Image (cartoon, rainbow, N blue to C red; front, side, top):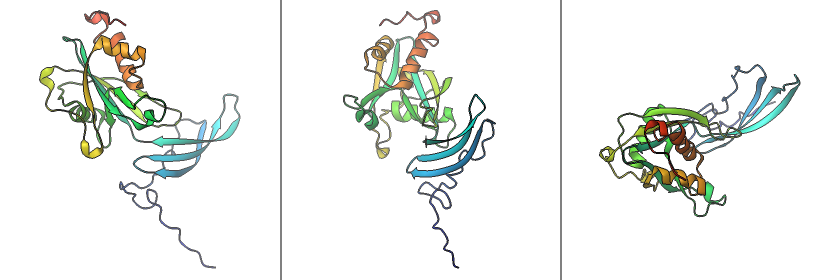
Length: 234
């Protein structure tokens, strides 16, 4: 009996369009939780990012084991930044078209949000400096790490690194606007901090990462009353 060799699978056996292999290996060697045993990882879709279906055994709190399946979307990790000018009471945000929100009831898809981007091969600090230059047109001497968060842990693997940084008019080194070759068309917004915070209450800002950073700035960050700034008004 003769057998035929399976065709090589891009992203698994041979490099895909981004030079990646072994994309079906993610999670197979995890042992940090003895109550989870990964049985199989199937690569179901790969474009710029990767969708996987993983089968694993899970030990419930009552001790029973059951087999579960989960789909995970792997787009890598990212970083997000809130630049603030405490002296003038302003923050820098962006506005750009986001098709996923447009198709899910957002009025026009033009989302007001903090500048952010994927890490790609960079560390978080290098990545957020890159994004601040590309999207906002500013150069920052110091960026402060605020916290990390998983933004959609039911299906998306991404961990987002949150940063804040002081800026001034002298920080500007370019026009910002993003990288046109990558399809970016970003408007830079300089807003009064109190107005930006009010926008999270009335629905003009609905982006999760941006709401988190603005609330952090009001409660624990540069605009908290103990820091010497006047309390933001609704």
